Length: 396
Length: 97
Image (cartoon, rainbow over all chains, first blue to last red):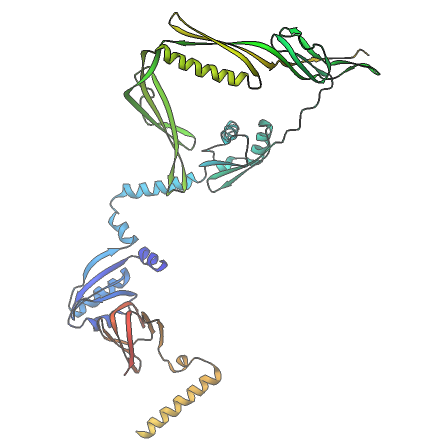
């Protein structure tokens, strides 16, 4: 491998020659330099490979022997450069490319965030971007200590950060902050009030004094469990009220589904606009940035160019796809509308009456003004306790 | 003539004795060619004075006073540089003549 590379750099020539005694000629030239891959075609013809310098000696010797060696091929860097020496543009291009490559290694190609669990990497990259560090930042100009400190002052959810550069990749290691639990506000008190109207079935007061009993009719906002509690020994004491109050309530759910509606119908028109993001700078690859049609769906895809499946280049190709659609007027039958309304209704009941016991339900349906209306009245026993905070300050 | 041969043999045995006492390799004292063989596939010889003749089955070499004949199949002169030679192929025999 190394030998092949050296040979390529020095350049080599494959020669074929024919003379009366090729073995003797080979003996004569073997002190000129390295000769390899010697093959005898027949008793008069032979071919071998030698370096460029050795070839000059072989040529002068062959003239003395009275024959002319035939060059089969020339390979190596020297010969490639010689071949292209008149193509100065190519050489300038290669040189320019190499300079650009060397220069590009002084910039950040990629930012990788490690160690975050709750906070998304995108948000961390955004904060770093706001502080002037991101893809395309000139590495020698970055003051990492200042960057780390500024980041910690800006983003309170991070307790520790370290930005390390490995090659052209910025590895951002972070540790998320563990927030201390909220301080208990001793002046803050809680009353339990009614979330809606109902008739009390049961009061489970874990803390505080009961203000209602079974069979009482309560209205929304009425006090159910008070934070002021009467005791035999200490008199009135203040506690944050807690508990559940179960009451019989009547709930009404309404669903309205239009019988005439508009739906999206995609046309065949599609437009793609590409742009490249190189080292943090965006380069639009189209003259137009938006399609000619007005109603469209926009889809954005962005991907990095990866070399050999491993090397992430600092070039992101962004593709904006605009798909045109038209609004088409459609009608649905009452049965279809009912199906949709029932699905919505069950979803709402599932969400709002998770812990409630449903006693009875009554469904009424009607169609008016092009709308299918579904009304569901549910009688149930549910927890109507709702916390209401207030501040209490004793007069000194 | 016989005396000359005896003297030569005496000289050689003396050099081999010196070699065994001094623990110096005999090739450095006598100027013998060095041969290194990698299995039966490659043979490296240092000290080739003349490459007499070669083809795919036989290679004739002169190594100072020694005449060497390498026999085999698909023999190839892989590398030749001054007094060094590297032969590749299926080597079946090495004969000193």
